[in-house]
Amino acid sequence: SQKIEQNSEALNIQEGKTATLTCNYTNYSPAYLQWYRQDPGRGPVFLLLIRENEKEKRKERLKVTFDTTLKQSLFHITASQPADSATYLCAPPKGFGNEKLTFGTGTRLTIIP
Amino acid sequence: GAVVSQHPSRVICKSGTSVKIECRSLDFQATTMFWYRQFPKQSLMLMATSNEGSKATYEQGVEKDKFLINHASLTLSTLTVTSAHPEDSSFYICSASDRVGGNQPQHFGDGTRLSIL
Image: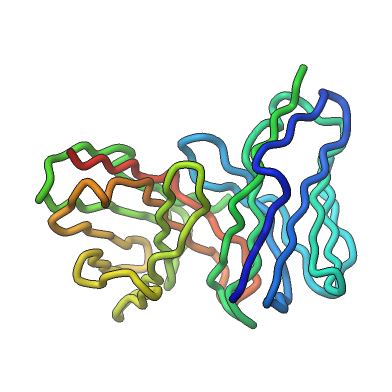
């Protein structure tokens, strides 16, 4: 069955360091993968989308990579700040060309001042 | 940017009550909206796809008679939890895209926390 695994339920990083979050998937061949941020009691907010033919995507301090051989996406936040503390979710589509997304359980990131 | 509004943000009611949750796209039209449920410390689970002008499509294991979805206009979808029981208590979230087709970011509402006593 299809599975999405995000590394460690919780991750603590010192302010100013780079936070790296991992998303591994099995029994998927996603054409793209999305990353979202979710704060407690709020809906997710879209951050980045990376396509299978893109090795890397950047947006300000965020960087996402997508390795279809390893079936893995990495999400990096450089120069992390306490305001980056949130749960980060990776979301591949349910199927080819599908609008529906499936979500990993997320990694709860805490940036320690 | 595209905004999705959800109402109410919180509902507390007695067992057996039916509860309606609204999801509106404020500045774009959405032929498709999605409804999710999220239990504490768990991921979002897709419940159903709401299609404007036609029947919703439900994910496996979701009771369509329990969770009624109506998508009467291009900016409004409603989810009604019928005869709610304590096990229906959860965080319900809707989403929509302001663009057509797969491969598009989703814009989420801020969710409705439903508590059934």
